[in-house]
Image 1 (cartoon, rainbow, N blue to C red):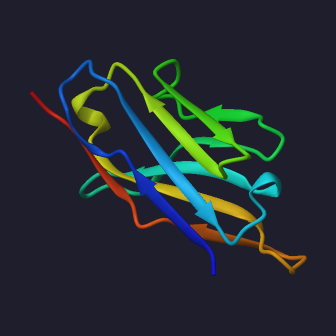
Image 2: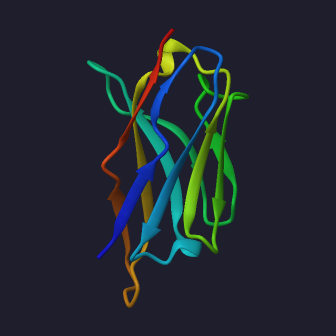
Amino acid sequence: QVQLVESGGGLVEPGGSLRLSCASSGIIFSRSDMAWYRQAPGKQREPVANILSGSTTNYGDSVKGRFFISRDNIRRTVYLDMNSLKPEDTAVYFCFAKGPRYGRDEMSSFWGQGTQVTVSS
């Protein structure tokens, strides 16, 4: 089965940094597009950053220059490095993958369970 397991969330002071990790299994990671989304209370889930299978990256305007997405195809893990954190970054952060499962041709989409990031003094 496919699993996306996030880690690294927690409480951090404004201006601080945090690294989120998403470990994948059950998908052909090197051929999968990966992304981070976030959802704050009372708000819609929004894209934060994505990294395609060819390693092209894209960022939401609110995090551009502060957040950086990367991938390790050997460890089958995607990362989100968050710097200069602000209280408005507080949200549940979700890992997302779109790619083929082993033994299958079609592309499928998957979500992790999410990890809480709280930015507060």
